[in-house]
Image 1 (cartoon, rainbow, N blue to C red):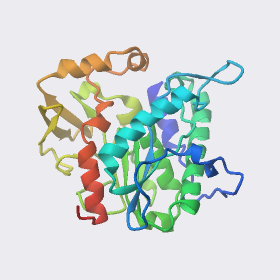
Image 2 (cartoon, rainbow, N blue to C red; image 1 turned 120 degrees about the vertical axis):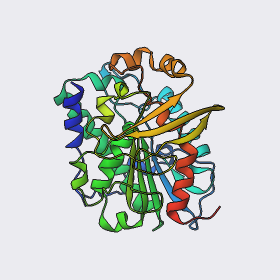
Image 3 (spheres, rainbow, N blue to C red; image 1 turned 90 degrees about the vertical axis):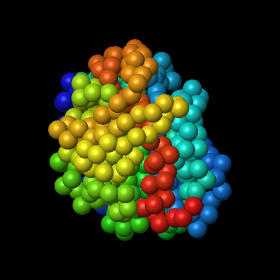
Length: 314
């Protein structure tokens, strides 16, 4: 099932250069469609366009029927806001203009749909985000450079946006960060997807997935990866790097056979406890998977790297 979904997601990206005409009737014209950042807007800053991960477990429409896309109910928006605020605090840190759309993401329940139904739902999600990005480019970006960042479902959609954006937009992109998601050989056929190989090159895509062991690979987000970069030392070989999380020392290195980040820690059971919950287990996620922490472990490193790639001195 998960392998079939991977193949579908790989084929869902919109064609390079496809356009959507935004107008006064666009739902993205409403400020309520966007997270309201606490950071002041300035043309002297680089933009950070962020796509949130899967925060909605299940959803129903106005008639009470189960649907597989968020209806942006109040509780959905609150869940989005928690991640938006975290990213603003750790990734943006007031150094970037911060834009994040409230899009109609697929719910966690959609992961277990039949492949054909999932493809239908995902195509709708992808179109929604492409429309949001087009509106942002036409009405909010004002010609500035930008970084594109997404986590998990957001990382999937980062790849779609890379295939969708125009060459002119791509040439202004500092880098794209598909956090907690893989780049496949098929993705690399896009002229706009060039895997990162160091910490300074621009126009590249950063991709990685973390686990306690190779048994922790979650096929939906990690299988088929042809590249990986270590976000602590920005190397693509197996050179280990140390980092601190919650006052505990960890070591991370790349397993070159799977292109996974393997994290060594003195408290593996702490992470397995969090993975052992009904949502992850319904998707058959192994206890050694560290998908949730791809956002948390490396957030400050991502902030500093966007700064470096953009040539911004703090």
